[in-house]
Image (tube, rainbow, N blue to C red):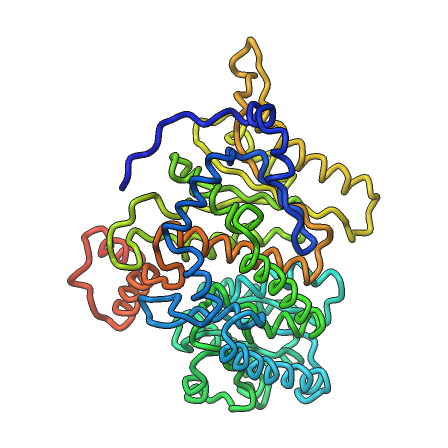
Length: 493
């Protein structure tokens, strides 16, 4: 690991004084979203340094490989084809994605036409990206025109099953089972629980209520799901990048097909920006420069605060996207990485978080890169003054972090000079949400290129699962440490 740089960064206030064009250089308007990175330490010299580093790291070639169907995931020897789901990948992959999407639309149309009888609810089962993405879409956008009651089930905990099926009518509920491999222990256990729930309610053909979403259709067939109710997606679509594929079928059912298409188009618009914009104007790349700057100077966490209740699931969604993608310690070539990789991503919802964690942000000793996400237009039914106050709170927090406040009483002094970025959506609709999620995906990819790591594998999640699977089969007890054996005995296992 390289030593942390210790040279001092210029104070944020001084940067605004010394760079008259700072606001115009570090604010960007793309796809109905305003990005403000001016309250970071990205001065002209730092941006130039990182631009040179991106060139040396082969950023342009890596980006071309991503969009051209090259081997973007070298450890598994395959491309990363989620961009093809938005129409921006290689022609072959785009054609395959379009074919799968037509199959998905045909099933959505059949459901809406009554092929499954009356449908009032959907139980979406998956884990990780197979749930986090669709849940974010539905939670953020269903207030506009929800067509169905969609519930999400990921945890193997029986209490999660109870909560997910509560208030759903088994006679009019479809069960969507999303698993790339269709071998995931938690997902298959929850599928069995859903079938038991349907049988217990007297449903004559519970398997007939299942829809499978998978990159391994043969596995779903083996599980007894009819071929007409299996929605495939490409092997190159990673779980945390899969909401654009058939994994998003529950969102398409809840929001309508037109909304799902608008989501894809918003993401495609950000893809095109990332692919073709010059470095100085490329928002995901500039954001990655700031990420690298702070992580490599010892900032171990990045906090994202959504100042809109509809985006309350954005921080947990980003946790997986960023920490599973870039939480690595070796390069794509298997060599120790030279710099700190992904920070801990966390966050919350404003203004709730102001009364919980902002004390540390303003006066604590832990260095945190902060990000605010807000929406200019509100769609709630309340007095517009409420939304005005919400936005003012978001903007005031960024101003306070930078400016601070001196006091003779050290307990009332705010040091200031604490960086933040702000993302302001014009409105929260499928197009802008698609663009926002694509921005975070491409920013994550840009970080990986700067580090020389592969963001598209996730072998780190396998070890604990392997041990749990062996223990469930009555194997591996002798290899356990004394602490784990004692815990199992204490729990009666």
